[in-house]
Length: 196
Image (cartoon, rainbow, N blue to C red; front, top):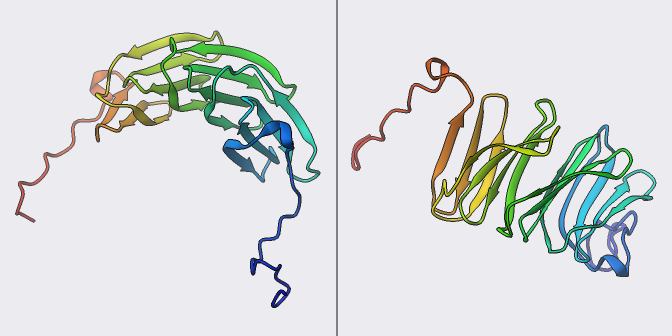
């Protein structure tokens, strides 16, 4: 029995609606936006990206094409980008479900990427430690920093001024897009051990 309106498991988080189906198998990645997009997006075990309307629960898009497990994704009201363990990044127009670009990393897994819709750029980081900047208008590489890290790139951040990448090598690399006089002047050296 339940207490205080709770289900038999004792949880007050009873599902409002179950989404998906047997064909999707499981969700490897998932995110949602309650704001303008009003969508839930999942990278599924059948290698498809699924997009649901959060209010109605209706499946808006089932976007296939990945040939390996989906590792990461990001979306907004206009774009959905997803990466797979074979190094492929797919970029879709979320409004109509049309594939815009397929970006490749030559079979090197991509676990980290971020796009900036305002600038039309996407930064990606690979398991071999490389970082790439892509132009989403043309689908071409703008810049590449091969083997920036000695281990997998685990996170990237991108804005109008810089790309920042972090790897399992415990290093954080900051690359500025600004001309040299406007770049970071440098961070102070860490204090020697044992001092405050």
